[in-house]
Amino acid sequence: MNTPQTAGLAEAGDAPIYAGLVEERGDVLAEVRRTAEQALREAGPALDFSLIAADAG
Image (tube, rainbow, N blue to C red; front, side):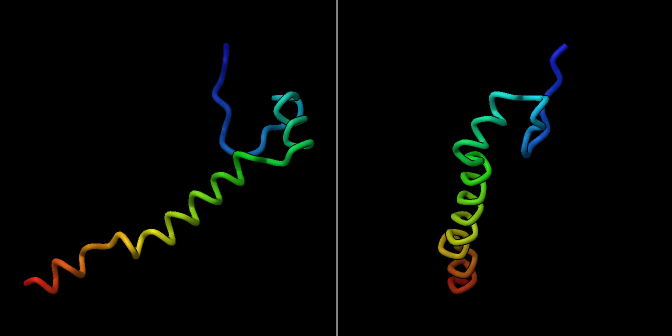
């Protein structure tokens, strides 16, 4: 029976192909996750329209 993988790096025995790719190319998924989190942090203040609504009242 297949069990879902937890987030993060896979153990070498759990997913040898993925572990080999991470070793060769780096952990692309982790890098994408970090980049997306950074983009959300930077875009958050630019997309915060709550001050506009407070100024209108």
